[in-house]
Length: 265
Length: 159
Image 1: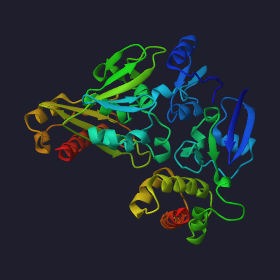
Image 2: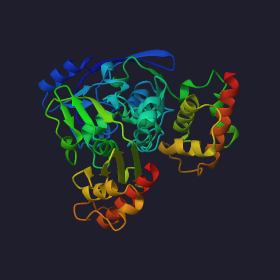
Image 3: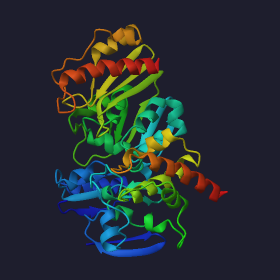
Image 4: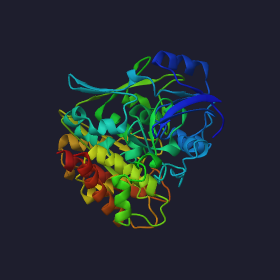
């Protein structure tokens, strides 16, 4: 790791102030992505602002058909939360598929969403469920939040405080894992609210998570796996690597979307 | 250098450390608790798993400073004197190790698993929960048997 100065604020306002003072600093949540990145010297922040002692940023609440998860809530907490399991079982299931048990004991929803790794799981849930990402400054719709690989609408020094997920009538997440890393080669989150359907894909897009308008229209006409017969996302613009080329990922998107619809219906 | 203090296996320890110090480096290099191993150093293999405030974590992917004030238990903290912890005993009884490099992490993961999911663990659950612990010798079969037996023994000991 490159050298950094360490800070441990006790409140969001203190963290915002520290982030403002240190433009080349980074916020540390669970650190399950950031610390490996720093160890490989792919990131070298001048300052590390450890959010782990801001207890205000932990907790889950369900009110008026919306599940609100504060930013430092760990994956294990979401995966095992009776409230989340009852309101949006697909969201709890997704949290239980991230990493491994030790990673889920430390990694946080806010860290995952802020990082917007192109293979992360949570961004697909945010986009498909039409989540709202709340920061210390404002509320941002998921459709506006994810702006490309590792790119988000967050401004310098802006801190996610919570993420709110409207409860869906039906929802499911299907993940095709890289057999070695267990990251999503392709992950598809399907959600149905009333007549509206949203389909979000992670792991596949070269610009990160994205929605599939054709799939959504077909599923709004008929919420069945067969509705997706013959439909496919174009391979251009999809990731291609030694694990899966773009054509294979395009194929997987339709397969995983069908499985998600079958499991949700 | 920054001051850090934590409780490791029941003893309070304090030190001034470089902020970059990982928990596993602090345990091994500062405290000489070398039972916690570094295998991959990329949070894949689980040889470095320790308990931080009761949670099994990868100590190669945790800053020591984040653990300021925390309760840490390492593999050295499980046995009571010369009496092995039931999970350690089960690994011995069931031939749950060959080279032994992954064993500390396996056992720390297993003990936390029993605390989370109880003493009656089926094979599928154990194999799923071992997703973050790699063993290159055993083929896992006897590790799974050891954890099932160790879980039963922990349950019996708790009664």
